[in-house]
Image (cartoon, rainbow, N blue to C red; front, side, top):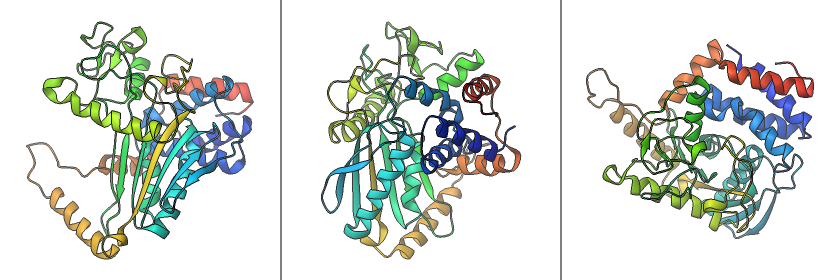
Length: 355
């Protein structure tokens, strides 16, 4: 077990070593460690070597000039100047929050960014201000649309955070695919197969090979196949891609630059600038009094918690498992598997930083 503070300090020092400012290094480290605390190990410090590989390949600018390049009272387009998405994302969400303060809602499309970590981190920023937060991002083309052999979409997650009064914030944070690619990475490290329904092979057939994507296969949309609603997952992923890419001026579809763990590094850019995201902040009192709304959210959450459950099961509220995991890991530390420890130690040796 490693404590969150140990991981945060190490990660911060690595980002400082590549030239990030102290503020940006602290923020980037916080985003990554928050994923580990919440049990989303696929998007935590295990990804740190990947960000450094992006830096090595000239894909990350450690000192970006992030700026608004177009705006109206309630909307904006932000150019991330190839900065860490871990930094660009919170910056852009803050713009959305400020827009919402003035106009009731704020919507921000981002271009020229990079992988921004877990979407839920950014959505929660708005919830702290009695706002409903939304965050989405597209990603490297690892996903085949329904009936396709070509990989044209990313795992393209969506997160929505809705504050309550006494109950914890409702947080739905999910990929538009059957599973996030990071889950395959975890099984790859363990040498285990993936469940059927997660991926297809190069011929479009169901597979349990955790390395299928590296061997010409693809991840599958949420729903897995047409009979189980994969066209709906495909539609969700397409919406995220259009909002994040086509609307912002970033690349989109098969042209979205890959993250370093995607199995390939070469970006096939050409229709836009870098990776894109989309953020929204909606001031609750633009619709009804915030305290009134949050009291009703308590009622909503409590009723769902009281639902009669299948034997041996419990009805959960989106965000429950992550909150429980965070409490446990803050107390007992974060388990980090040996391959990740090894990659972090190698990174530390490069920069003279001890884990």
